[in-house]
Image (cartoon, rainbow, N blue to C red; front, side, top):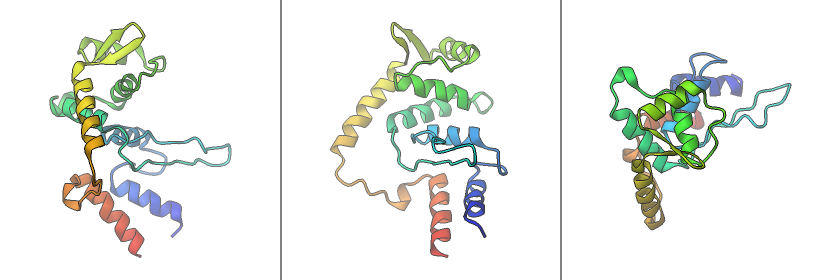
Length: 167
């Protein structure tokens, strides 16, 4: 079986994609919800698509903040990938020029984005989480993660990769 088929199978089993060529929004959504860097297509050229999915949790404060927001919302009113992207951009101090007006208005009306002199910022809750996460990260001595500490989704990914690796 070609490597691309194996990678596709892993991504399908984990729910990132439905079939080849679909699921980009899911990949972005899960990277944002898991505090990881966004999918990277920078090596794509006119002959091939090259996708790199990050594994490292790079933005733990944003992960905790996004999960807190989602958990507080009813199932029929969860934030979508475009909402999360706008919030992530604000957390990084990035411009919202690529965010559509409807998304911006929704997040401002809900009090999740606050207009500031130099763009947009998040609520004080995010900065509180950020401060606590940064302190905990610098005090941490052993960053080894035990299997019991992983979420069900992370355990599923671990077992799929381990099974594939052991073949």
